[in-house]
Length: 358
Ligand code: ZN
Ligand code: ZN
Image 1 (cartoon, rainbow, N blue to C red):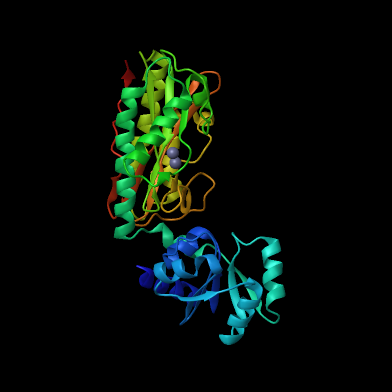
Image 2: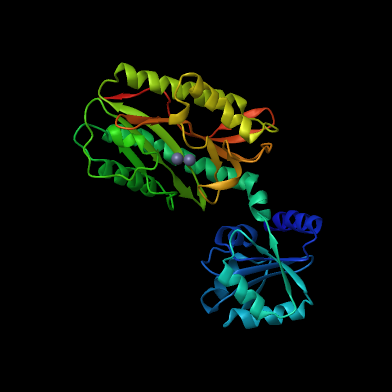
Protein backbone atom coordinates (compact mmCIF):
# COMPACT_ATOMS: atom_id res chain seq x y z
CA UNK A 1 0.00 0.00 0.00
CA UNK A 2 2.79 2.37 1.02
CA UNK A 3 4.52 2.03 -2.37
CA UNK A 4 1.52 3.25 -4.34
CA UNK A 5 0.96 6.14 -1.96
CA UNK A 6 4.59 7.27 -2.24
CA UNK A 7 4.41 7.06 -6.01
CA UNK A 8 1.28 9.22 -6.12
CA UNK A 9 2.78 11.71 -3.66
CA UNK A 10 5.98 12.00 -5.70
CA UNK A 11 3.97 12.72 -8.83
CA UNK A 12 2.19 15.59 -7.04
CA UNK A 13 5.42 16.98 -5.60
CA UNK A 14 7.08 16.87 -9.03
CA UNK A 15 4.09 18.71 -10.50
CA UNK A 16 4.31 21.39 -7.84
CA UNK A 17 8.08 21.72 -8.14
CA UNK A 18 8.84 20.59 -4.60
CA UNK A 19 12.05 18.50 -4.48
CA UNK A 20 11.38 17.07 -1.00
CA UNK A 21 8.65 17.11 1.64
CA UNK A 22 8.99 16.90 5.42
CA UNK A 23 5.91 15.40 7.11
CA UNK A 24 5.46 15.53 10.88
CA UNK A 25 1.68 15.50 11.27
CA UNK A 26 0.56 12.24 12.92
CA UNK A 27 -2.09 10.98 10.48
CA UNK A 28 -0.15 11.89 7.35
CA UNK A 29 2.97 10.29 8.81
CA UNK A 30 1.03 7.14 9.54
CA UNK A 31 -0.66 7.10 6.13
CA UNK A 32 2.63 7.39 4.26
CA UNK A 33 4.67 4.96 6.36
CA UNK A 34 2.40 2.52 8.18
CA UNK A 35 4.20 3.54 11.40
CA UNK A 36 1.79 4.09 14.30
CA UNK A 37 4.14 5.82 16.75
CA UNK A 38 3.14 9.16 18.20
CA UNK A 39 6.25 11.08 17.13
CA UNK A 40 8.61 11.21 14.17
CA UNK A 41 9.28 12.89 10.84
CA UNK A 42 9.04 11.59 7.31
CA UNK A 43 11.28 12.96 4.57
CA UNK A 44 10.29 12.13 1.00
CA UNK A 45 12.54 13.03 -1.92
CA UNK A 46 12.32 12.00 -5.57
CA UNK A 47 14.11 8.71 -4.83
CA UNK A 48 14.57 8.33 -1.08
CA UNK A 49 12.21 7.96 1.87
CA UNK A 50 13.38 8.38 5.45
CA UNK A 51 11.63 8.05 8.78
CA UNK A 52 13.34 9.92 11.62
CA UNK A 53 12.35 8.79 15.10
CA UNK A 54 13.65 9.06 18.62
CA UNK A 55 14.99 6.21 20.74
CA UNK A 56 11.53 5.01 21.85
CA UNK A 57 10.38 4.17 18.35
CA UNK A 58 13.39 2.80 16.44
CA UNK A 59 12.36 -0.86 16.57
CA UNK A 60 8.67 -0.16 15.99
CA UNK A 61 9.48 2.04 13.00
CA UNK A 62 11.65 -0.64 11.40
CA UNK A 63 8.91 -3.18 11.83
CA UNK A 64 5.96 -1.08 10.69
CA UNK A 65 7.66 0.93 7.95
CA UNK A 66 9.87 -1.57 6.09
CA UNK A 67 9.86 0.59 2.95
CA UNK A 68 11.61 3.42 4.86
CA UNK A 69 15.19 4.13 5.91
CA UNK A 70 14.79 4.53 9.66
CA UNK A 71 17.16 7.00 11.35
CA UNK A 72 17.34 7.58 15.07
CA UNK A 73 17.68 11.14 16.33
CA UNK A 74 18.56 12.45 19.76
CA UNK A 75 18.41 16.10 18.75
CA UNK A 76 16.09 16.36 15.77
CA UNK A 77 17.65 19.57 14.43
CA UNK A 78 21.14 18.05 14.29
CA UNK A 79 20.02 14.86 12.58
CA UNK A 80 17.89 16.81 10.12
CA UNK A 81 20.86 19.00 9.24
CA UNK A 82 23.03 15.94 8.56
CA UNK A 83 20.38 14.25 6.45
CA UNK A 84 19.70 17.35 4.34
CA UNK A 85 23.42 17.79 3.74
CA UNK A 86 23.84 14.13 2.87
CA UNK A 87 20.98 14.30 0.35
CA UNK A 88 22.21 17.65 -0.92
CA UNK A 89 18.79 19.25 -0.44
CA UNK A 90 18.60 23.05 -0.73
CA UNK A 91 14.81 23.32 -0.79
CA UNK A 92 12.33 21.34 1.30
CA UNK A 93 8.57 21.58 1.54
CA UNK A 94 6.77 21.61 4.90
CA UNK A 95 3.08 21.09 5.65
CA UNK A 96 1.85 24.61 6.18
CA UNK A 97 -1.38 23.51 7.88
CA UNK A 98 0.50 21.54 10.52
CA UNK A 99 3.76 23.37 11.28
CA UNK A 100 3.61 26.09 13.91
CA UNK A 101 5.55 29.33 13.60
CA UNK A 102 7.83 28.12 16.37
CA UNK A 103 8.52 24.82 14.60
CA UNK A 104 9.29 26.66 11.37
CA UNK A 105 11.79 28.84 13.22
CA UNK A 106 13.43 25.67 14.54
CA UNK A 107 13.60 24.17 11.04
CA UNK A 108 15.16 27.35 9.71
CA UNK A 109 17.67 27.43 12.53
CA UNK A 110 18.58 23.75 12.07
CA UNK A 111 19.71 23.95 8.49
CA UNK A 112 21.18 27.19 7.22
CA UNK A 113 20.93 27.73 3.49
CA UNK A 114 17.91 25.46 3.12
CA UNK A 115 14.79 27.14 1.78
CA UNK A 116 11.58 25.95 3.48
CA UNK A 117 8.65 26.00 1.12
CA UNK A 118 5.06 25.97 2.43
CA UNK A 119 3.06 23.13 0.89
CA UNK A 120 -0.73 22.67 0.97
CA UNK A 121 -2.72 19.54 1.84
CA UNK A 122 -1.04 17.18 -0.66
CA UNK A 123 -1.15 14.12 1.59
CA UNK A 124 -4.73 14.91 2.62
CA UNK A 125 -5.67 14.90 -1.08
CA UNK A 126 -4.26 11.38 -1.42
CA UNK A 127 -6.01 10.26 1.74
CA UNK A 128 -9.37 11.47 0.45
CA UNK A 129 -9.64 8.63 -2.09
CA UNK A 130 -9.68 5.34 -0.22
CA UNK A 131 -8.00 2.11 -1.27
CA UNK A 132 -9.89 -1.20 -1.01
CA UNK A 133 -8.13 -2.13 2.27
CA UNK A 134 -9.15 1.20 3.78
CA UNK A 135 -12.74 0.82 2.61
CA UNK A 136 -12.94 -2.60 4.22
CA UNK A 137 -11.89 -1.17 7.58
CA UNK A 138 -14.31 1.74 7.36
CA UNK A 139 -17.06 -0.70 6.41
CA UNK A 140 -16.29 -2.81 9.47
CA UNK A 141 -16.29 0.29 11.71
CA UNK A 142 -19.72 1.14 10.27
CA UNK A 143 -20.98 -2.38 10.88
CA UNK A 144 -20.01 -2.10 14.56
CA UNK A 145 -21.68 1.31 14.81
CA UNK A 146 -24.87 -0.14 13.31
CA UNK A 147 -24.74 -2.99 15.82
CA UNK A 148 -24.30 -0.45 18.61
CA UNK A 149 -27.40 1.42 17.47
CA UNK A 150 -29.41 -1.78 17.51
CA UNK A 151 -28.09 -2.49 20.99
CA UNK A 152 -28.88 0.99 22.27
CA UNK A 153 -32.52 0.66 21.21
CA UNK A 154 -32.78 -2.01 23.93
CA UNK A 155 -31.24 0.36 26.49
CA UNK A 156 -33.14 3.58 25.80
CA UNK A 157 -36.05 4.20 28.16
CA UNK A 158 -37.41 7.01 30.29
CA UNK A 159 -35.23 7.48 33.37
CA UNK A 160 -31.84 6.61 31.90
CA UNK A 161 -29.34 9.48 31.63
CA UNK A 162 -27.57 10.77 28.53
CA UNK A 163 -24.27 9.81 30.14
CA UNK A 164 -25.34 6.20 30.69
CA UNK A 165 -26.43 5.89 27.07
CA UNK A 166 -23.12 7.30 25.84
CA UNK A 167 -21.20 4.92 28.07
CA UNK A 168 -23.15 1.91 26.81
CA UNK A 169 -22.51 2.91 23.18
CA UNK A 170 -18.79 3.11 23.85
CA UNK A 171 -18.68 -0.05 25.93
CA UNK A 172 -20.59 -2.04 23.32
CA UNK A 173 -18.40 -0.99 20.40
CA UNK A 174 -15.18 -1.71 22.30
CA UNK A 175 -16.46 -5.05 23.50
CA UNK A 176 -17.29 -5.95 19.88
CA UNK A 177 -13.70 -5.30 18.85
CA UNK A 178 -13.37 -1.59 18.10
CA UNK A 179 -10.00 -0.02 19.00
CA UNK A 180 -11.90 2.89 20.51
CA UNK A 181 -14.51 5.51 19.71
CA UNK A 182 -13.89 7.88 16.81
CA UNK A 183 -15.10 10.72 19.09
CA UNK A 184 -16.93 10.96 22.42
CA UNK A 185 -20.51 9.88 21.65
CA UNK A 186 -23.10 12.64 21.51
CA UNK A 187 -26.35 11.83 23.29
CA UNK A 188 -28.60 14.87 23.43
CA UNK A 189 -32.16 14.60 24.74
CA UNK A 190 -35.01 17.08 24.39
CA UNK A 191 -33.92 20.75 24.24
CA UNK A 192 -30.25 19.71 24.43
CA UNK A 193 -30.67 18.27 20.95
CA UNK A 194 -30.58 21.85 19.69
CA UNK A 195 -26.83 21.87 20.42
CA UNK A 196 -25.25 20.09 17.43
CA UNK A 197 -22.20 19.07 19.50
CA UNK A 198 -23.77 18.55 22.91
CA UNK A 199 -21.82 16.63 25.54
CA UNK A 200 -23.75 13.93 27.42
CA UNK A 201 -24.93 15.08 30.85
CA UNK A 202 -26.78 13.58 33.80
CA UNK A 203 -30.03 14.76 32.22
CA UNK A 204 -32.66 12.04 32.40
CA UNK A 205 -34.49 10.93 29.25
CA UNK A 206 -38.21 11.64 29.40
CA UNK A 207 -41.20 10.40 27.46
CA UNK A 208 -41.94 12.53 24.43
CA UNK A 209 -38.36 13.69 23.97
CA UNK A 210 -36.34 13.41 20.80
CA UNK A 211 -32.84 12.02 21.41
CA UNK A 212 -29.96 12.70 19.01
CA UNK A 213 -27.33 9.94 19.05
CA UNK A 214 -24.11 10.67 17.13
CA UNK A 215 -21.27 8.20 17.50
CA UNK A 216 -18.73 6.01 15.76
CA UNK A 217 -15.78 3.76 16.40
CA UNK A 218 -12.29 2.99 15.11
CA UNK A 219 -11.37 -0.33 13.51
CA UNK A 220 -7.73 -0.88 12.53
CA UNK A 221 -7.20 2.87 12.57
CA UNK A 222 -10.28 3.77 10.48
CA UNK A 223 -13.34 5.65 11.74
CA UNK A 224 -17.09 5.41 11.37
CA UNK A 225 -19.61 8.17 12.07
CA UNK A 226 -23.40 7.87 12.25
CA UNK A 227 -26.28 9.88 13.70
CA UNK A 228 -29.81 8.74 14.40
CA UNK A 229 -32.58 10.66 16.14
CA UNK A 230 -35.26 8.67 17.98
CA UNK A 231 -38.25 9.48 20.18
CA UNK A 232 -38.79 8.25 23.71
CA UNK A 233 -42.47 7.30 23.74
CA UNK A 234 -44.74 8.90 21.16
CA UNK A 235 -43.66 11.52 18.63
CA UNK A 236 -45.85 14.62 18.49
CA UNK A 237 -46.79 16.36 15.26
CA UNK A 238 -43.90 18.77 15.31
CA UNK A 239 -41.30 16.04 15.96
CA UNK A 240 -42.72 14.10 13.04
CA UNK A 241 -42.74 17.15 10.76
CA UNK A 242 -39.13 18.13 11.50
CA UNK A 243 -37.96 14.52 11.28
CA UNK A 244 -39.59 13.98 7.87
CA UNK A 245 -38.08 17.24 6.64
CA UNK A 246 -34.53 16.30 7.66
CA UNK A 247 -34.97 12.83 6.18
CA UNK A 248 -36.15 14.29 2.86
CA UNK A 249 -33.16 16.63 2.84
CA UNK A 250 -30.81 13.73 3.54
CA UNK A 251 -32.32 11.64 0.76
CA UNK A 252 -32.04 14.54 -1.69
CA UNK A 253 -28.33 14.81 -0.87
CA UNK A 254 -27.79 11.05 -1.17
CA UNK A 255 -29.38 11.22 -4.63
CA UNK A 256 -26.95 13.98 -5.60
CA UNK A 257 -23.76 12.17 -4.55
CA UNK A 258 -21.67 10.67 -7.36
CA UNK A 259 -18.23 10.99 -8.86
CA UNK A 260 -17.98 14.36 -10.58
CA UNK A 261 -20.73 16.02 -8.52
CA UNK A 262 -19.62 19.30 -6.96
CA UNK A 263 -19.29 19.03 -3.18
CA UNK A 264 -21.00 22.41 -2.76
CA UNK A 265 -23.92 21.31 -4.97
CA UNK A 266 -24.46 18.20 -2.83
CA UNK A 267 -24.66 20.39 0.28
CA UNK A 268 -27.10 22.63 -1.61
CA UNK A 269 -29.32 19.67 -2.56
CA UNK A 270 -30.10 19.09 1.13
CA UNK A 271 -30.10 22.76 2.07
CA UNK A 272 -32.65 23.65 -0.60
CA UNK A 273 -35.17 21.20 0.92
CA UNK A 274 -34.72 22.65 4.41
CA UNK A 275 -34.79 26.25 3.15
CA UNK A 276 -37.99 25.65 1.19
CA UNK A 277 -39.64 24.55 4.45
CA UNK A 278 -38.52 27.77 6.14
CA UNK A 279 -35.83 26.24 8.38
CA UNK A 280 -32.73 27.33 6.44
CA UNK A 281 -31.34 29.30 9.40
CA UNK A 282 -31.73 26.28 11.66
CA UNK A 283 -29.33 24.19 9.54
CA UNK A 284 -26.20 26.12 10.41
CA UNK A 285 -23.48 23.57 9.74
CA UNK A 286 -22.16 21.83 6.66
CA UNK A 287 -23.75 18.74 5.14
CA UNK A 288 -20.74 16.50 5.47
CA UNK A 289 -17.03 15.83 5.89
CA UNK A 290 -14.52 13.25 4.78
CA UNK A 291 -13.92 10.27 7.09
CA UNK A 292 -10.97 7.88 7.22
CA UNK A 293 -8.02 7.72 9.60
CA UNK A 294 -9.59 10.82 11.14
CA UNK A 295 -13.28 11.29 11.75
CA UNK A 296 -13.11 14.78 10.22
CA UNK A 297 -11.09 14.89 7.03
CA UNK A 298 -10.93 17.60 4.40
CA UNK A 299 -11.20 17.11 1.44
CA UNK A 300 -13.96 16.42 0.75
CA UNK A 301 -15.89 19.15 2.56
CA UNK A 302 -19.58 19.44 1.73
CA UNK A 303 -20.37 22.90 2.88
CA UNK A 304 -21.70 26.24 1.65
CA UNK A 305 -18.31 27.84 2.26
CA UNK A 306 -16.19 25.08 0.69
CA UNK A 307 -14.47 25.60 -2.64
CA UNK A 308 -16.24 24.19 -5.65
CA UNK A 309 -14.66 20.77 -6.16
CA UNK A 310 -15.82 17.49 -7.71
CA UNK A 311 -16.29 14.38 -5.60
CA UNK A 312 -14.20 11.40 -6.71
CA UNK A 313 -15.01 7.70 -6.71
CA UNK A 314 -13.56 6.12 -3.58
CA UNK A 315 -14.06 9.14 -1.37
CA UNK A 316 -15.88 8.44 1.91
CA UNK A 317 -17.87 11.21 3.52
CA UNK A 318 -20.82 11.86 5.82
CA UNK A 319 -24.24 13.16 4.76
CA UNK A 320 -25.72 14.77 7.87
CA UNK A 321 -28.30 17.50 7.58
CA UNK A 322 -29.97 18.71 10.78
CA UNK A 323 -32.53 21.18 12.05
CA UNK A 324 -32.00 22.72 15.49
CA UNK A 325 -34.65 24.71 17.33
CA UNK A 326 -33.44 26.37 20.54
CA UNK A 327 -35.63 25.49 23.52
CA UNK A 328 -37.24 22.60 21.66
CA UNK A 329 -34.55 20.25 20.38
CA UNK A 330 -33.04 18.99 17.20
CA UNK A 331 -33.05 16.31 14.54
CA UNK A 332 -29.96 15.12 12.68
CA UNK A 333 -29.66 12.09 10.42
CA UNK A 334 -26.19 11.03 9.32
CA UNK A 335 -24.92 8.26 7.10
CA UNK A 336 -21.46 7.50 5.84
CA UNK A 337 -21.21 6.94 2.09
CA UNK A 338 -18.63 5.80 -0.41
CA UNK A 339 -18.73 7.79 -3.65
CA UNK A 340 -19.01 5.63 -6.78
CA UNK A 341 -18.96 6.44 -10.50
CA UNK A 342 -22.75 6.54 -10.75
CA UNK A 343 -23.90 7.32 -7.21
CA UNK A 344 -22.90 6.17 -3.77
CA UNK A 345 -22.83 3.16 -1.52
CA UNK A 346 -24.34 3.81 1.91
CA UNK A 347 -22.03 2.27 4.49
CA UNK A 348 -24.20 2.78 7.59
CA UNK A 349 -27.33 0.68 7.41
CA UNK A 350 -29.36 1.47 10.54
CA UNK A 351 -33.05 2.17 10.03
CA UNK A 352 -34.06 5.76 9.30
CA UNK A 353 -37.71 5.37 10.18
CA UNK A 354 -38.69 7.58 13.08
CA UNK A 355 -38.40 5.05 15.89
CA UNK A 356 -40.66 5.46 18.93
CA UNK A 357 -39.03 3.74 21.87
CA UNK A 358 -41.17 1.92 24.42
ZN1 ZN B 1 -21.43 12.20 13.48
ZN1 ZN C 1 -20.10 13.57 11.04
